[in-house]
Image (cartoon, rainbow, N blue to C red; front, top):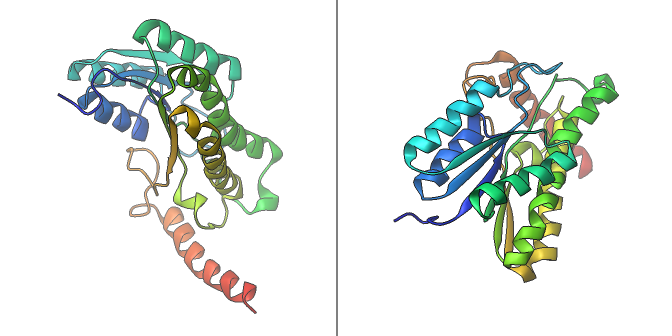
Length: 236
């Protein structure tokens, strides 16, 4: 018997990394899984490959090997209609949606604010913030009708403290915490809970980690020293 027997989880960004880890963890606890990923491996300005169709299928097979039902859906969280369709397909094939893990996200080229292009800004905000809005909006009517549901949104340590050179990413991760808090207030009366997690780097095998990447290490070090200076200035 698992803690999640008889439930269904929809997970965005499910092809690899934390999305895959979430899928396997929930499956081992008894949940059936719907995986959503856009399967676009090569994005301009992205220094690591995104999830591929092959990896999405690998994750689906891994969940199935645990003994749970699993479907895979190729869809972009930036597309609101695609998220509505993903929710509909999940309900049609798995019967319900009890849990949403909004894990899809992107970080692009590092740079000071004035050096970030409007195109990069829109890509990051549309994926990391609007994408969360889209998938939450898609599943909420079903959860409201059931008067029950759990929503977990992936924020970041960059959504709890300032880091230089990632103003687009940081803004998106601060914003989803505000979205989550509002969602929790609005839908708590329907038995729906909403929370965020704020991880640091995830060792997915692709994203450079603070331990083995000089640029990432410098970013972390710069954040510590500059935040101390900014804090001192704000108190003077």
